[in-house]
Image 1 (cartoon, rainbow, N blue to C red):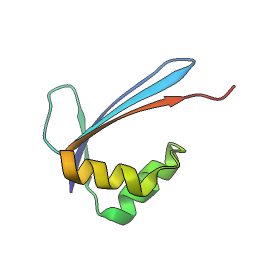
Image 2 (cartoon, one colour):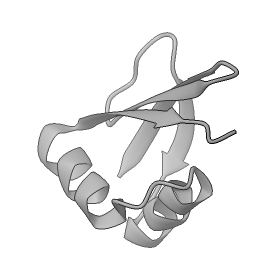
Image 3 (spheres, rainbow, N blue to C red):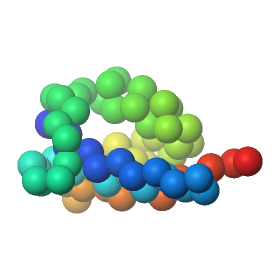
Image 4 (spheres, rainbow, N blue to C red):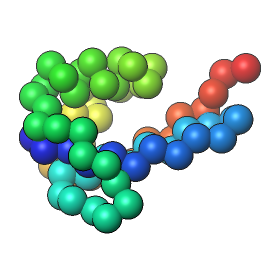
Length: 70
């Protein structure tokens, strides 16, 4: 699945927008399979890995709001 990502971070949170279509302000990550997607979600410490993959496949996009633990 071809993936484009927009990733913005502040001191308190991180907003990650993932799309399966090209968007002008997003950067291309690559053509990722399920294993690579699992590794990506692990890298951002998101615990809902399978749910995120399923939602991304179904809708074609996924927005994640990650609160940084201090």
